[in-house]
Amino acid sequence: MDTAASRELVRRYFDAMRSGDPSLPELLSEDVTWWVPPSSELGGTYRGREAVLGLMAGGVGLYDAAVPMHIEIEHMVADGDRVCVELVLEARTARGEDYRNHYHFAFGLRDGRICEVKEYVDTLYAQRKLFDGPPGVLRTPDERFANLPGFPFETHYRELTNPFDEGTLRAHFVDEGPRDAPVVLMMHGEPTWSFLYRKMIPVFVEAGYRAVAPDAIGFGRSDKLADKTHYAFAQHVAWAQELVTGLDLRDITLVCQDWGGPIGMGVLAREVDRFARVAAGNTMLHTCEPELLGRIELQNSAQGERDQTVATGLLDWILFSQRSPDFRASMALAGATAREVPKDVLAAYDAPFPDERYKQGMRQFPALIPVTRNDPGVALNRRTFEALARFERPFLTIYGDSDPTTRGWETIFQERVPGAKGQPHTILERAGHFFQEDCGEEAARLVVDWMRST
Image (cartoon, rainbow, N blue to C red; front, side, top):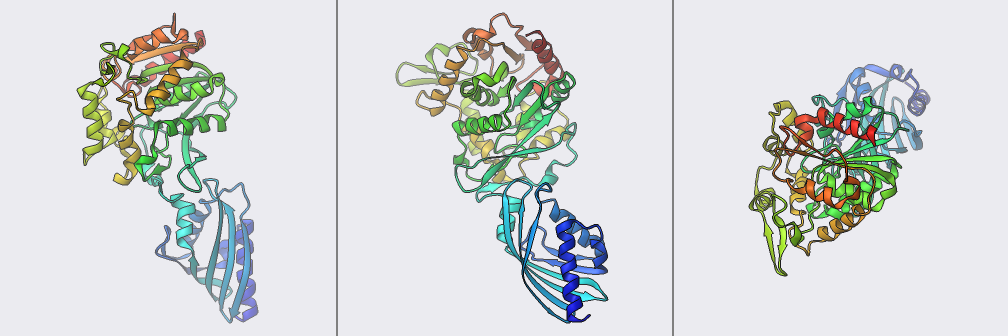
């Protein structure tokens, strides 16, 4: 090919890239090869038109299709059947961040088609923007979530503040049902994610509600911070509040369990007008008050000015989370349910945590349990109780009969929250700490009936 024809062919290729021209494959030879730097997430040599088109499709999926991609060719040098191009690509990533990177391409041409491409790019920038997120942030590979049992829901993401570095954190949430319907907001705790609510979500949607189930930062499909000291109780509340206000959720019925209670009700204390009801299940608000001594099974109460009574089981759990070399979500699920959990379901709870680097949020949650009156979590929970003491909207407790870790807290809530008076509080039979796993459909139907009656 002469120089002018080679230059024109490469220009046609980039024009087709910009416009999404379906004739682009015709510009590639059947035996085309495309080399990507090995340091790239997509690194390697792709051989044949089909393989190269697959590479292109995968690359396009990294960007937001709703925002046009801008390609500006800065330099093009052609000599016979060889063309070198320097360009700048600007786009919006699929995670909602601005992307601007310099690319260098070396093209080989034959018989009016592209037969060879070598691509050079700032792979560190591309890795961070397109795959890893900001420094110190990990993102569980999507393939870890393939073929999850009973979890067919569409993925949704929202960018949240990263107070520790530039950029944002990507938070995942399930969002099913009519967008203009009353909201059921399901908040999980340790060490689970929105998968925990898979049995309840369809019941709420079938009843006509909007079902929203977020993954806390550090869990599920949400981004994970590599430094466990970056996980704090107040920060979890702030992230949850940012998600609720960012989605502008209103007329909310909060369904919360484990840490989902302190976090979800912590948001309620800051955004009370957004909440219509609360269904608290197997949750707690540790305040280390001496008045709680003897009233909750897993003791955590002050004695006098200097001493604290903390149950051995609670201390064992905190220490195990920090010291055990093998700390898996599936172990907690299997040990805190009253009914047998299938192996593929247990594996789904481990899916977000490919290795130890991803587990820092899961390890940190137990260490955030307030066990002295000086813990900042105590002040936060007391402020939440102050808000609940004025909460006259319906407040329901649904606790498992086989959950010693929260036994007694249902009575505390019933006594302290005005809206709990006269409600059909329930003890679920054959239900452990993770009642959503033991009897999720039953619990959801119970909540639906209660919502309709209030």
